[in-house]
Amino acid sequence: MSKSLTYKDAGVDTEKAAELVGEIAELRRQTEGKRKLFGAFGLFAAGYDLSGYTHPVILSCCDGVGTKIKPLLQFDMPETAGVDLVGMNVNDVLTANAMPLMFLDYIGINKLDEDLIKRVIAGISGSLAGCDCILAGGETAEMPGLVHEDALELSGFVVGAAEKDDLIDPSTVSAGDRVFGVPSNGFHANGWSLVRRILDDHPGILDDDEMRMLLAPTRVYYDEVIALRDAKLRPHAMVHITGGGFRENVARVLPGGLGARCDLPRWDNEPVQKVLAHLDEDAAIHTFNMGFGWVIIVDAVDADACAAALPEAQLLGEITDAGTVDVSIA
Image 1 (spheres, rainbow, N blue to C red):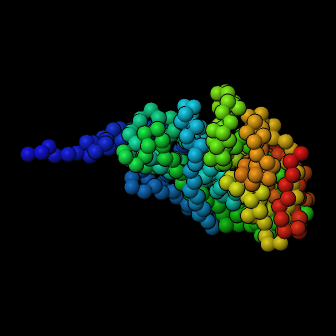
Image 2: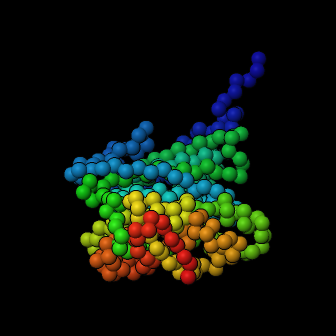
Image 3: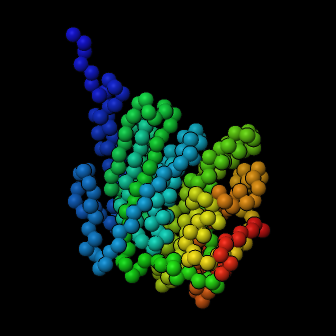
């Protein structure tokens, strides 16, 4: 009589996965500061009490880290992957002037690696604690034969909320509005298929220290949104510069018939410049954030107040009636 097989024999250890959930509990608890879950953690669904809102609007986003995960694992930087995952999701919710409430992660792996997963979760938890967002739950899927041994699938999901009257309305953008940019940490988690192709085609253009600089995590722009709120400023639009680069992401918030004229300073990041040296300017603008991960569009009368509230922000240009977003690099 043949031996009866178990799930573990097939390469999935559910007992070890259950132990891992307990081990990361303290990391998760640090995300419950100003906010608390409604009900216990660890149930089949997580809840958040919205009774503190008068007219709440729920916002949700999902995103991943993309192919940046490959060099992050190669350079032993899984915590950065966790921060990237938070940034790529939370920033999208923030563009609406909403606050992130709850975050969930999905990790797909060939074989359970407790240390690797705990380091990713440490990056996630630390970043969430910095923007008052709860790590409400997640899923770790052990998938032998589907996920490659040296790979990691990583996805994030965020739920946010705002009072209906506090939501930003991009339809209010008009010609003459000023365009401000807040610096990025680097390429963030966008355009890495192109970056990796350039590095493969031109081996040796970056040393290991420069590669780690290039892999800097996605900046989370929570503090900037809070600063604008504290200054009683209501932007006409806020933009998270992600896939599609600077031009495309600014264009997506503009009402029909409007455009923008922006003059960007040279990106002061030498590892980045070594990569960009192998691209023409238009391709770079179409792919990357060009040094500004966050864009704020305000009425011209609010320009000085915006600059005062955000000392890092730089005036990049203004909204026009040209119908196109024209970008040049100084």
